[in-house]
Length: 498
Image (cartoon, rainbow, N blue to C red):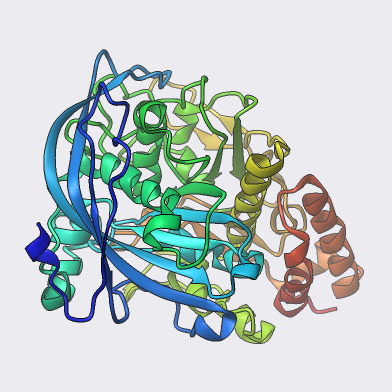
């Protein structure tokens, strides 16, 4: 394996780590870590992070990974008993984004299981929460945990551009043995950060908290990680599982498809070792080829918070366009222009404009902040309530949302976009291309409807927005740091005649 990493100018750092899991269940792991010069193949933003006080670096790490198997059934309650199985050599990579000034580091590293639904590594949650990461002084690490991101293979959207195809000269030395080993590869990446005082992948930073985060496909895999692997690995201090649907990935064939016995959904185990926040959009609740999260609902516990956010879609304007331009210095007018309703996505026409509800982005940022405080100070976040649903009358009939007079879902985490609406926002009901079922809809109200809802015109609308926003901030579902930006966006977006 050492010959794989002879890169000109790269510094090789070797560290003998603790076992990937408990000594009796897995072989010891001794990864080799290589710092690789030059920009990594990972879209983070179209603005420079250096003036914001952040450095971006890439490291290859290699060694031996374990797969897992279940000693028992994959029961719907999530209490899975996993044991280490086969071992295989691997070579993958991490991308580190860290404060250059140690004094600005808040002590927390956010570790994303990179999303491969597009056939290559995607930093979906970096995009969603990077504004909070940058202003809060977090460090970020993206992990190429799955085979598709490294080697290529089937994905939701075509075959994508995996690392070894995107840059064979740089990444040809990498080797991924398959997704049944992804869980341990991810653990080893997290464990590298715990040894940061020895190998310096975080430069001079020494982490005090390490948070796991992942969205969509990554969230489905993290659900399995929490239920089966975390009781053994004990690497992460908390988990932010974002848009996970209702199932969990299997261990043995590591597929997103529901494992045997999961057709009705799978919950998170109730004896969680570390705090977990799960954030769900409307899309995630409903069945769409895989079980919706409504089949996996469960009560909050002293280590679990479930936030369901009405008026949101699995993917939206922020996912496809706004996130990459959203720098702290971006003028609010340009930010507002990115939120304009559109029915075009990746060159495809949708049947309706996709969901353009900003609360998705803002609530996930608040979830990260709350999880960090929960770990650091032992202060649990506010509990949410479920979005209201009504089940189909006939056996097997689909569920639907209980909606108000404006067509917006009732219940859930309340924000100004559903309490003081200017459009009907939903996470379901669209089509077009391969992603249409994930992007929801936005149907702006006409001026006559806005005048009826807000007879006092823009002034009345903004007063109600501020009142709703203040309630959401008080409950911790939106951060005070985002208040002025949200008010400015509301002022620009209002289309009433008064």
